[in-house]
Image (tube, rainbow over all chains, first blue to last red; front, top):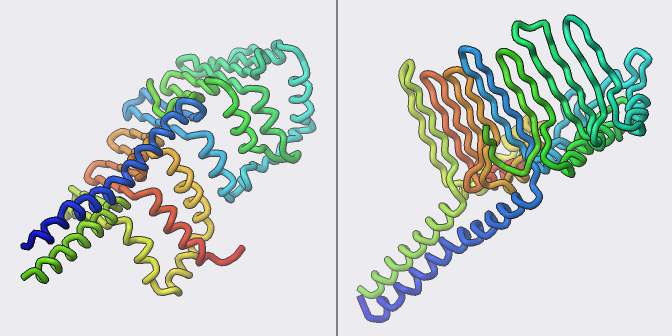
Length: 205
Length: 145
């Protein structure tokens, strides 16, 4: 091997290394940007189902809200089109859901519905800009508690579409503007279900 | 002798660069291990860089057929792959159901799917950019709606 050829080795090694590592550097930079974006503005919707039955089923789902917002309009299936779900009973048995919601929205905080029976206790209230639904099911061997908390802005966005549809994308967009919130909590003798919103891309039990 | 050395050097450098480019794009991996029955083991490791290139060699009528079949869900696949690239490290789905287990996550810009059940495990890893490329190619062959 000549002296000249030997001189070429460092050049080729440098070029190869630069080519190999340059994209990794870019990727690392991108990751770091995304990681900080995650800390500053990313909102994640988490679903957790833990079952205490013999199989011990567990379901953990973590979805970035922005991803859901972008992906939902691409789904065209059954009643879901363009990020909106067509529902047939917005005027359920003569009850106009929109009008009721509008009345609730414009009214002050308070408990609007209270049902107490041997089977279940149900209450619907508005508090701190959120619609709270609480169901205490007494029929099961161990009492089941269902808590649903939906920010009024989200309900408003959901109903912002045409009369017989729910605008899911608008609802998600409104949800993204909310702080950390637990939306659904169900506890009974076998299952614990939680749906909540925060800015972490991992779930901690 | 010098000429041979130069040729060898050029060939070696080309291989290094080609290898670097190939592995920069990532690998498409499918591992299937079956411990029941005949116990099949399938290992498919394909450099992701060659997938979009290979698509161009698929006969057009086959691509058209694939495009027609996948037309309904390809926009969804494209949207998911495109958006997931913004989340290169995330746990998306984890399901334990008795002895069955499914995990879907992203790691280093790859979509990883692990599924386990008694007697069978499947591990799939595919760069999200490759899924995006393939979905775009297939969408181009889908009939106009």
